[in-house]
Amino acid sequence: MSKYPVRVGKRELRNVDRQPVEVIDSADKPNPFFSFQYSYTEISSTGGKAHVKSRKTRFEDGKLTSEAFEGELDHSAYERIVGHAQQYFLNQMALFLKSLSLFLPQSRPPDRD
Image (cartoon, rainbow, N blue to C red; front, side, top):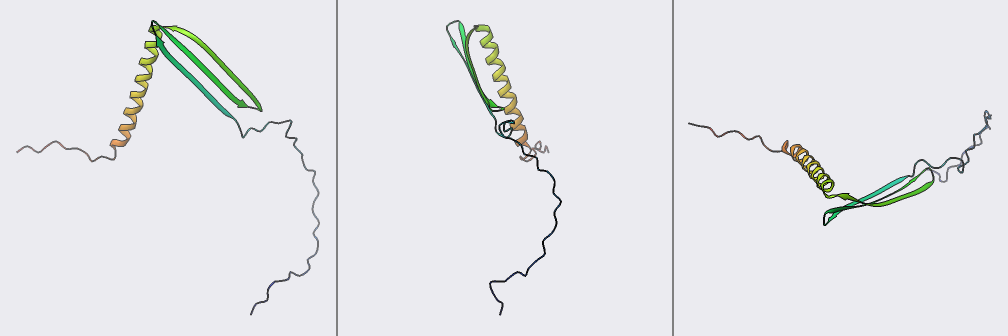
């Protein structure tokens, strides 16, 4: 039968090399492990003008910064932006569907007699 609690015998003390320890003050160096960035852009068309609203907020190096602006564009610029966005979306969707097509069985042309 074992005996519990087990008692540890006495050990000799060891000599440890004493080296200076570097102390880093957290106030001097901000925490680089926490940062975020948020951006929002809205483009709408009313009448012959395109309205743009944008907001950006970020927290980096212990500093919070925020920017916002509003402006108007010509309607042709709005149509160009929307066309580019639609083309980008369609290209991304085609790439996604192409990656899924690898899981589908290969189609063979029907045998002709």
